[in-house]
Length: 178
Image 1 (cartoon, rainbow, N blue to C red):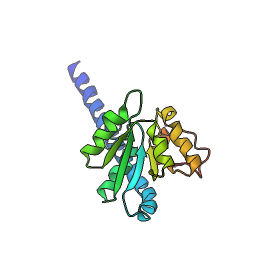
Image 2 (cartoon, rainbow, N blue to C red):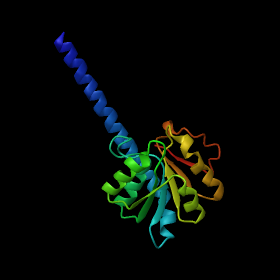
Image 3 (spheres, helix red, strand yellow):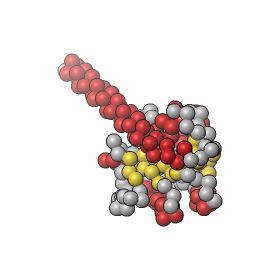
Image 4 (cartoon, one colour):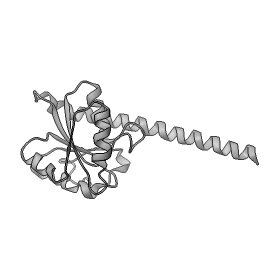
């Protein structure tokens, strides 16, 4: 029956729109919450806050705004001086093809790094914060988590229900929850 099929299609579209709205609202809350994590360190610096990110956690990955990049978007929209180092993210180059493009398009200063350069940047003290998502790509992000051993602050910008990393060292690793 055509009217029953039409009603089912309309219900599906309504549900999809509600899911989309919920995702955008969640990502914006992640951004606002994460902004608080940047305030203290940003106030101590005269120049921009240098942030390293890995993989893609922007609007192309999460309905229009992004999880980890939502923190950066929130900071940028409030006039916070930030500069982002985006790992290329091998083997699919999501950082190079997606994250860098999103950041540049949004007017956020971005430098593309090969994945192996992140450790050197951290060792040289050129990274103030690491903000990543806690999704399916946690295995490639694991070396960034290990940076925490060297007093590097690692933030996970994601909805709590999606954080894949076991934050057993919660005093050292902060998961941003919604």
